[in-house]
Length: 399
Image (tube, rainbow, N blue to C red; front, side):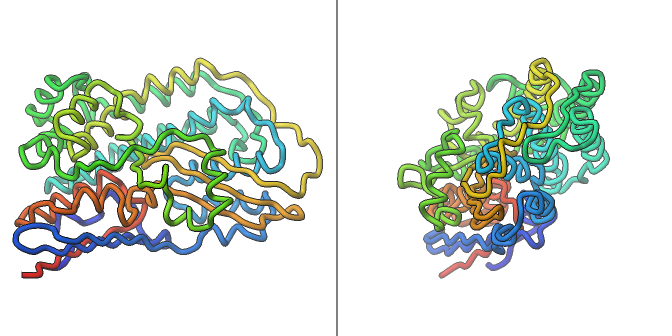
């Protein structure tokens, strides 16, 4: 059989286009997947930043990357600040708030739009729009002039009342649309919550907890560690191929909610029982959503007013790197300045980790049962690893 199948439409993707694509080819024989080919195709977006001044690059970054535009801007900003010698540490907490808010809306898109579609149910665009509106209110509540996404930072003037209102709206929207009750904290609670089937998220969780589903896609690929920006910078600067084929200790790695939440008691219990399969991936995303409001509120408590970082002088030459956690995983940028313009720019994105030729998707699909449900299961695994580009799956039965 060939094609993506109804269950694969939009696999974890919102708005594919210029960002590129992922193609997955499964060759089956004698009832098993015998070969897996995973290829990521992207336009060389980073090249478009070469030859630009820092200000020009910052204006262009959110236009080049329509998904995770805030995180991409933050990584670019951090890289430029390192190259220019700008100390923007007073803005660190505010930037973490911006990154978390964007990650929340990306997680919410998956849970409110993609998950219902996989169940054959109506997506929930109105709920998603409310959550996006709440998240969008955070930037102006931090930077009234909306100047937070520039090297050195803007004029940080936290409006705690507006921030509290935005966080409350995110918390209430998630509770209403995703959980209904208190989020499950352990295996027993997760099974009870999934069994109620009160929301699409609960029904999807019930689906992936079923025998034959919970451990689907489990493999031995290690989690990407929370390496600092310099770790990525060293590798990106030394090897241009690292952008397309990143490695950790010479091996593939997975990044995203499961890598970040593997020590959470609920996720750890699922990993111990089923390995890094569908159930652990889905639960890790829910755990991140459940802890969102508390994490945002704790950041607000640490905020102080801050001014833009003072410019140390006319730095025209240097290199720098930046790393940001996104919903999909750890994103890293590296750049080099020459004569005040960007001479080289390289990016290692989560998709290149999770959809490497020998990465978690490829290893998770290799050797699995090739039956009538393979397309659906493969689509769920693609969505769990969450590419930021369109994904097409082809299944070819060699028999």
